[in-house]
Length: 327
Ligand code: NDP
Image (cartoon, rainbow, N blue to C red; front, side, top):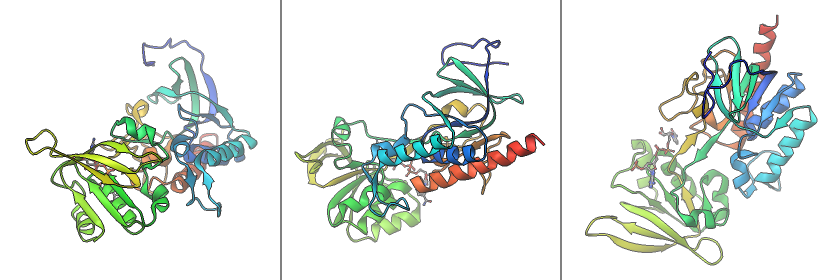
């Protein structure tokens, strides 16, 4: 059996730790799967990944997760979920899955390139990473006007002016959503066409408070107290190149997400972007005993509550699979 670490082939004689249910990832999907799996006596072991708590630890206030009428900060919510998972006996460990081998009957996962775990059932909940432009200003104003999720943060920009970067369905959807809350939405598109579906394009074009800035690229943000404006270059690299500054309070990125599925791709079917494919209505992947939950398998909704819901489904699917396995 070939077992690769990131650097070299691992010793096939290496002793593996045997685990009944292995959960990879510590966002709402991973922790919810852990809560359900531990309550079902599956003795789950959860590896957190590099960013313990996942994408929500980048957010400030979460006001749309049911059950928190006064809102809660993303990091607090993730800490609560972790405590809840631990309370029911989940073994939570820091580490990342660097490779897997699902070829044989044993599902093998390599942690941190140096530890082998054999699991009867595996729940992949490694999430997705929002793409950013790579500007220094995006880091400087993180949580102070820069966001990669309009549904999460749009509410804070009620009656204000914002910019959305991107030309795909997400950008069109987020611009339309924000237009319902904000005074004005600039849609910053790098080409002279939108990639979004025709229906979404029509929606954007027919919304009076959305202005599309064609062939514009954001190069910087400014403001003393959070984002107060964006610097854009129009027709960059052409003789007509022009720099413009626009006053805005919020800067939303909608240039796509990267699902964190790389270590699994040799065995698990994904779509062309890398989202793990699951059998509709379930969390089952193409490999029996391997389930996927949360943003790593969801290009569409990507909400904390939908991730948590699919984490619950994954634990139930894993529990049923294991009870069949041990009949
Ligand atoms: P996409 O990859 O479809 O679009 C990304 C957009 O961001 C493109 O317009 C791209 O420009 C632009 N972009 C990428 N990098 C940069 C950059 N560095 N600077 C400026 N612009 C940039 O991602 P989406 O998240 O929009 O959609 C992902 C998938 O999910 C798609 O298949 C989409 O159809 C689907 N989806 C479906 C929805 C629905 O059905 N309701 C809602 C949301 C998403 P360019 O066009 O020039 O490459």
